[in-house]
Image (cartoon, rainbow, N blue to C red; front, side, top):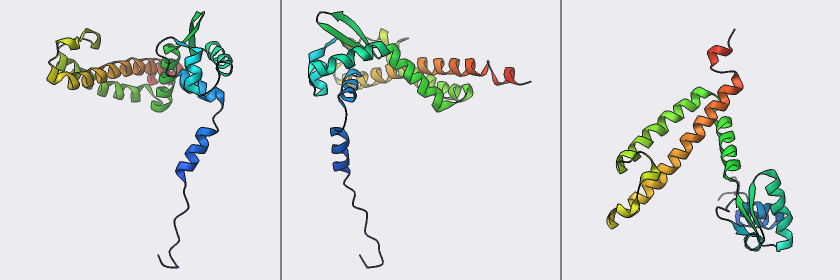
Length: 181
């Protein structure tokens, strides 16, 4: 480098990341663990995942139940699982912010429908739930699993997009034509 060329800034991204991770509160760590609870999980297991004590995790878990983020499915021992309806609501809310209009959502729905048809034709089934992977040959199992996983995701996203479209239409009083004078 010459004297006229400025030197690059000193960027220690690893150090910044480590600092950000270390500065997370117990509540933040419990929330991160809570978002992964797809099966009923004990306070002790959540505390271990969140790197805190059971006594530190318990009030946050109870608070997340009150907020609707988690469901408490048993009392003794206390078992928690994520509230899928809450997370679906959040995903739909994010879609309404992303697309802003029902027409934009319609375009996305059209694209997802095309992919859904491609995936359903691969399996020759009407829904991902109807697919039985044990009927797949061993050589095709990885590809079939990947396509089935994608099909489930596409199906879920279509459901969320339809809900986002419904919300957007409800917020504008229907179609754009009906809201004009």
